[in-house]
Amino acid sequence: MVPWLLLLVAAADLVALKTGRLDHPPELLAVLFGLAAIAFVVRWGRLIYSLATGSRRGRRLGELLAISGLLLALAGGSANWLLSLQGYVILVEGESVALHGGGQLQDFTTGPLARLEEMGVTMTLGELELVPTGEGRFYPASRIRVETAGETPVELEVTPQTEAAYGPLRFHQGAFGFAPRIVILEGEDPGREVFNRVVPFLTRREGESGIGFDGSFELETEGLRVEGMVDLVSLDEGMRGHATLRLAVDKTGRPLGEGGLLPGQFATVDEGYRVGFVDLQRWSEIVVSRRNFGLLVFIGGGLALVGGLFWALAAWRRW
Image 1 (cartoon, rainbow, N blue to C red):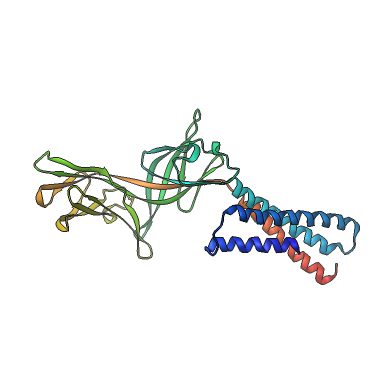
Image 2 (cartoon, rainbow, N blue to C red; image 1 turned 60 degrees about the vertical axis):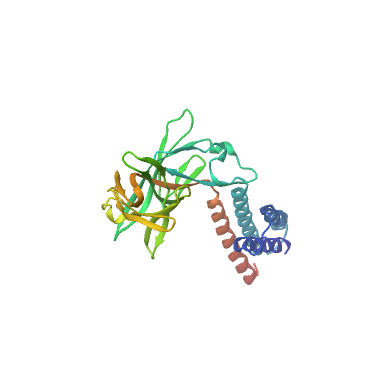
């Protein structure tokens, strides 16, 4: 019973960590699963010996199959953790990032035996396409280019439903949004430039299926606060038309003006300010991870289930 008790304790600890009931270093969980694996290996060896020398081999064979499946699943799960690499990066269209060493990735985590040299690639976001699915709905499709020094770049596409692979790396679609370039001028043409920057707008859920994109920023030196929203209603069915940027400008709590702008347009608000919508870019969050051994875990789990059922049948039939 020792192997099964250790496995039960390790599984309970994993559930407690996932649900937030416990908080401790993951190495402790690895030790628990390691002890369970060692105990199962010992039991596996004893079963092999007893199959060759004992009687009623049915029950032993069933237990052997179940333990073999569990060891296979534990090996796959351990490899996933030991070799894991995962993080994400946010890129605007046309922007590149070198993944070497993972220093450019946010929330970058690695396993104890992770090989950082596997991250030796450069990734470029070529285009973020919003693919319509009907009834005003759409999904993002990021077209990325991945290359290694001295090799031909590879074009890949990721969506919320599909991932892309390059060597041991896997790329997944994360969040996405728009990044308008907003310019604020003061005074007569050409005027004093107060603000000129690309502002990433965040994705916001609207109802059960709708999505909006909005953002805001403040200029403390001017006392200005600008709130904006990208209006997708003005886009055509292919999501390639010109979106409208709706802005509201306040100064120390007093509204100076609000309205919609198309790319390239400027509008005058109170107190001599002019607000312009110069360009609109799209940004995409690409999640980067290492390929895992999920298939190995799945096969091991299936083998353990078959072995467990045969074990129970053999015990019932006294095989």
